[in-house]
Length: 511
Picture 1 (spheres, rainbow, N blue to C red):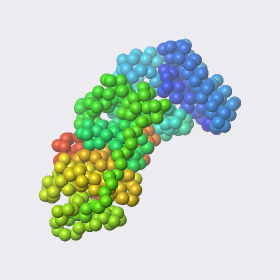
Picture 2: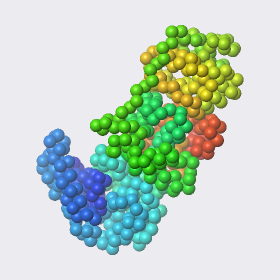
Picture 3: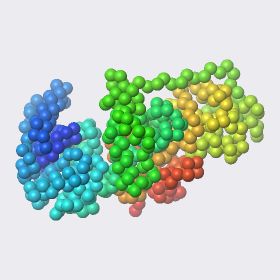
Picture 4: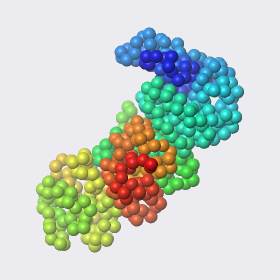
């Protein structure tokens, strides 16, 4: 609770739309001390919102996180309003209604005739252009995007979006109000997806692409990205949580708004599952089946039993050779050091961006005995090792490699051949899209990091993630992915390419 309500940037606000988002915004605004005038196309929805928020505040009182007097005062500040005309005295009006451009435009045209000339208008749109929403206003300079995330009280970031004609002072006032409500504002230009939805494309779409290539199943991809990079939810767990009827339209919208930019290409896998109604946890079935709200995860394949392991040979020109040899030594492997492997040897390589097939062909290795391991991050920094076979890898060599790298008890996932395995290509895609956001000037590097860590819950911001791996390594992965797949999806953003070439942090701003 603020100590001085009289210093609030907006004391009287109107809120149009009392669904989940509207209720959340109303809650934090009332808790900050603002009087919130509630409007909904269905009058009964307003009272339902007040009842729901009263119950929320009663629970906070019971938990000792709020006093009974404060809860009563908050409820008193929620004022039912008969319609838009009742918002005439508001100095800020926020809409949280259906995501349809024509409906939002009509609403703001009505509001412009009702509120004072200096009142601020804000849209909570998540995917529509703020500029387009305000295009029919006489004074579009007072309209800005004010995009919260659900659940609003817990998701502490809000995007303040400047349309083409938005007065900068309007954005500054909304940012100040965000802080008064206990949220962290990030400033964004009016571009498809703004910051968070834009930056989140890499994690989801690349994982779908990997699954579409039959590299690994959904559960294996989720386990790899959680255990190697520290994501709290795997991409398919996340899609089930948000539900495909929400996520897939956003993926398609951003892709089409960017004129079919390959970096944002959606997946037929998600489209098909949406068409079939298999949208996620809320219906009991998505990428996983749910029983009592719990995902039914398939068990991990058992580690093969190998009584005698073959010797291991690492090519002299192998990437990450020193780290790989040290790992093999730590695991007690018998390591061959001759210029060529014996006929019994397991050949292990550590591709960066390439697939195992390409490495075996270029190095003229016996593909039947060649297995790859992802060494993007130091072995001590990951909770899971990932091996990849190629189409010719023999079953006995696959089993031997699995047994060897699981020898110390660390989980091992064995996937089919993939340029960049799983982690390399997902991380490189995330970093590349983030670098392109900075290159476009959509937001500052600092606001990007804040938005992604708070809005998406990543273990680090995407630029910091790139710095951890190394910009040069990210570039190598992307260049090699282009070679393997021939897809412009993987072309490096100039922001990344230049900082990688100069040895600069990806957080280094342009002077």
